[in-house]
Amino acid sequence: MMAGGLAGTVLLTPGTAFADIGAPVNTATSITASTQWNSSTDVSTVKVTVSVTAQSGSSAPTGDVIVSTGPATSRWCDAKLDQSSGLVSTGSCFIKNLSDGSYNLTASFAGQNGFASSVSARYPIEIGGAPVWTADSPPLSAAPGSFYKYSFTAAGTPVPGYALAPGAPSWLHILNWNGEVYGQIPWWVRSFTYSVIASSSAGSAGAGPFTVTVSPAHQQAHLTTQLVCPRYMLSGQSGSCTLVMRNDGPAAAVNTTAQISLPAQLRARWCSWGWVHGCFVNGGTVTWHLGTVAAWQTKSVTVVVTARFSGQPWWRHSVRVTVNGAAFWGGQWWWQQAHASFTGTHVTIFRR
Image 1 (cartoon, helix red, strand yellow):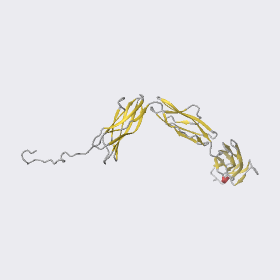
Image 2 (cartoon, one colour):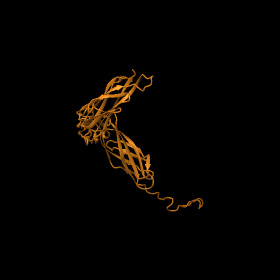
Image 3 (cartoon, one colour):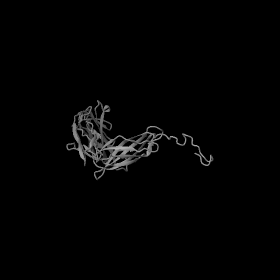
Image 4 (spheres, helix red, strand yellow):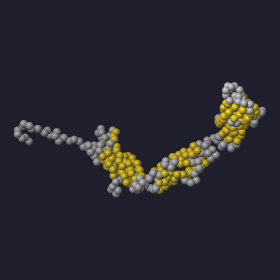
């Protein structure tokens, strides 16, 4: 078509002015995660995370994704695709005021900016109802005196709280807000049983009873020590230091050796228990060989000492010293012992 001759005219070459700009890039939409929150009005909010993936090309889709609970409830939210990596874009939105019940969420990408529309598969969620256990397999064996711990977890909306059922041992505890069961097992306990209850306004669920067997791979003794000496002494005065050993079991403490280590200001005079005047004195160390201390048995050893103030500057009127005690067991000789318990106390010595 020409007007006013050829001047100022443009000839359109076929296939140029109406060139095909290409078909939209196919996409795949999916719901990747959901998180629930409950409110004080017994309705819930769900955060839904979606992704849209380009099936070809070199860029990720852009635009909006509508997430819906379906025509029966007509709840929906708009997720903007605000993050991308490679050919995948992601976004999230919140669906509010959901009552208890079952829902099948779907996400719809309308298609724009050169990308075709797509709809996700159904994504089922459950709002409300009794809690459902997701972690309820605690350890059923433990060692005497060990620290027992396990975290129970239950899903549900509202979020459930946790409690131990009646009959649990008094030393076992649970954190109400996260279901963590914990407690220090006493040395004498050989088994214990407990159950856990998860509850909310929507219902409750029980886990257990769980019976835990307390039996170590090999029985060991648990020997504790306490040292008693005079708190105050005068120079030249005599007094006694007693080391008390108690075996809390469950096994006997074999080849037991007791020791009291004296400072230079306390001199051993005589001692009780054992052989040849009751003990063996080597410098400031007093040693007893006691053999076996049975489970639940208590033994004590005593050394009589005399306080000395020699070697102190003339202006000092008192000196505070430390006395140490120890018990070793498990080996043939004290330096080979596999186990030990240590204790100590202080004595203040005054110049006459």
